[in-house]
Amino acid sequence: MMAGRREGPLMKSGGGGGIGSRIAVAIGIGILFGCVFAFLFPSGFLASPAVIYPSNNSIKSRQVNSSPCESPERLNMLKSELASLTEKNAELKKQVRELSSKIQLAEQGKDQAQKQFLTLGTLHKAGPFGTVKSLRTNPSVLPDESVNPGLSMILEKVAIRKELIVALANSNVREMLEVWFASIKRVGIPNYIVVALDDETENFCKSKEVPVYRRPPDENVDSIGKTGSNHAVSGLKFHILREFLQLGYSVLLSDIDIVYLQNPFDHLYRDSDVESMSDGHNNMTAYGFNDVFDEQSMGWARYAHTMRIWVYNSGFFFIRPTIPAIELLDRVAHRLSHEPKSWDQAVFNEELFYPSHPGYEGLHASKRTMDIYLFMNSKVLFKTVRKDAQLGKLKPVIIHVNYHPDKLPRMKAIVEFYVNEKQNALDPFPDGSDW
Image 1 (spheres, rainbow, N blue to C red):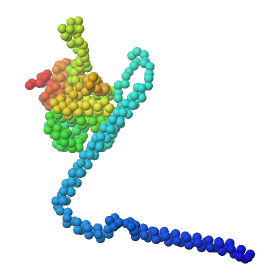
Image 2 (image 1 turned 135 degrees about the horizontal axis):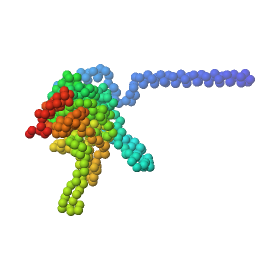
Image 3 (image 1 turned 120 degrees about the horizontal axis):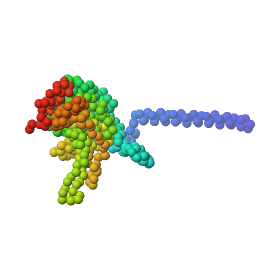
Image 4 (image 1 turned 45 degrees about the horizontal axis):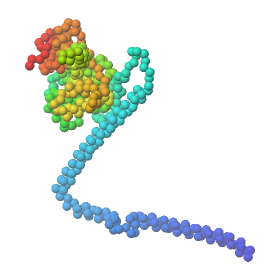
């Protein structure tokens, strides 16, 4: 009994080990068979024949048998459908980019508004009399290189301190364009670029080593750029300049009927959204005056005071990359596209100056009028300056031949008068124009 009791535990221990090992072996064999069957029958034993994958030979045979059925007509149709889908995809991508740009601009506007609110929202006590100044200069937008990466790369090389002169031109104004960039080179202004509206202008600028940018194809823009009149081409600038501002650059927009005599960037204030030359011909018309309207039938109240100012010239202005400035471009471009008989300069000034009133929300953009004797229009030159000995000694920054249709000969005469110092160079021309 004692021996049996001693052997009992040993026998139980040994037997337990044998049973455990057999279970382990059974599990191992089960796993092995499971792996084998999973490899051989990936779809399972009960898989439907419809979902069992065909063999390579079957696939090849089907490809061989189906190829004769693909007729040339069918292939052409498929190619046509592919081309159509590709075109639609490109158009959708363009729409997505435009929508993304609008959303981002709206967000930027919201951010800028919030920043200004935070700045102005803090309550302050008014200082002593004569010391209180309001906010004059709006902050710049955040640059968005995704708008036009190609243009962004060009501007990085051309612009100085994120500023440059921009002009639009087509082959119709080639001779004036040459006088224009020759005067810029003579002064030594490096930061300028021509937006070429046709191949001929692009090639001409490259041959003269003039910085040039050719926009990506756009049917609406290209048709006007190639065949449009001066006014039609002038209207394009409000559409094209938007990209420059979105990229964070300040632009001195210039028509090409302008002669440069000094570097204009040395004479800008940069404290406003828009800084523009005037069509006014003296201090009153350029900077504003109180014009009294007389209506005798009103008796005691016969005199009504009005404020008048001659318009800004939309052919030469400095515009900063701010939300109000971009809104100005959008407003003008929208109206010109929906009002084909409108003149871009009239619309430009209406959007800048009209105040908010019932049914209309005015543009909240700051503006500055340039010195009319530094940024001179041709009426000031030919009607006043050339006849005054003291004014004749002044050297303007630029002269814009905007009041006269015989632009090219007058531009050449201005170069002769101010650059080559021929005192009688302007004498052959009348004050106005001979119709």
